[in-house]
Amino acid sequence: MLRVKCASHTLKFGHLFDHHFPKLSIRGSEFDGFGVFAQEPIKKGAVAIPLYGVLYRISKAKVKCPKYGFQFGDDFELGPANEATFLNHSCEPNLYVNDDWVLITMRDISIGEELTMDYDIADFFDYGFECRCKSEKCRKNYHGKICADKKFREENGRFFTPYLKEKFGLV
Image (cartoon, rainbow, N blue to C red; front, top):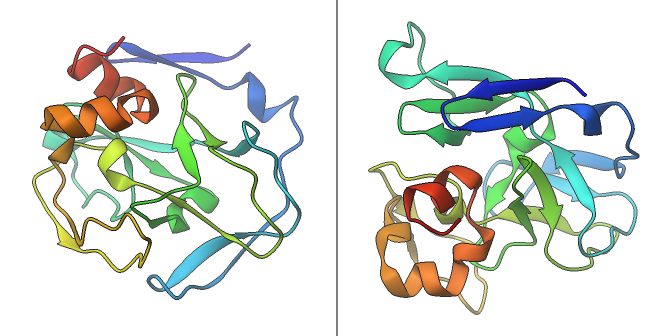
């Protein structure tokens, strides 16, 4: 299995070679711009999208880091080079990043349903935006550092990325 060590995490790429990934499409989204949609049913717990792309050292980047990325360490961000680039935020997501840095379904996903993730469980940057997810659990604003809130960690910590689990002592 191909592995890459970065910061305190190891990326494992074996799943890129020996796994069936669901058929997905990218098209206009009611959330924002474009989104990722299921073209076939996807079961809860399935690997939906592998994470791979360009790993940026934020403090040394000579180019602007991508708008949509996954924080991999205090100074590292993974700019995805696949469908993950087009994942929109939802306060009631259907994907999370597991300990192998793979996007996993949180529940069954129907044909035509948009795949989403909660950006608040994926990074710890000081920025924000008005949320337009319209879910019943909508927090109205994304502000990048809510994962520091104890109640938020208690409710959502099991879905944090490996980086955030380590940062907040959830491993």
